Length: 124
Image 1: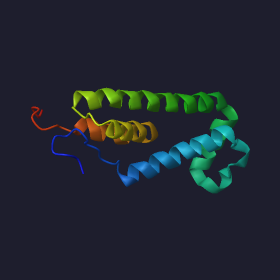
Image 2 (image 1 turned 135 degrees about the horizontal axis):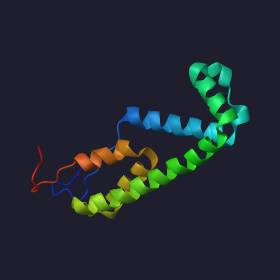
Image 3 (image 1 turned 45 degrees about the vertical axis):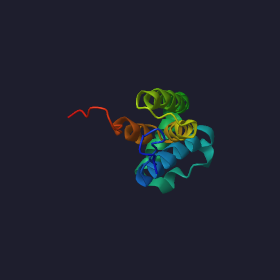
Image 4 (image 1 turned 60 degrees about the vertical axis):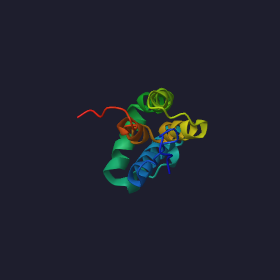
């Protein structure tokens, strides 16, 4: 639990978002690096879409995969600035925010952005 001064405030992302992001990025990784192993016919409309993208738009998938991780990295770096702005000084807490945001993106960043430390005016 966070100390009352807010210097070690951390909240875990919701389980729903953790599962959705993990499955989505895992499927994207699978289709980019091992497209021959994906059972497209067993995945219904998602499989048909993935097969079409692999067959006709593979560079978009490939560069999109890298772009996704670059975006997650920039979000994670931005979290370090937000932690400073909100008075979260604990190194271990900042590392938790960084790692969680790198892995889950906005599902984590949104929790930190919504945080209003004590003593700061709340916007309505």
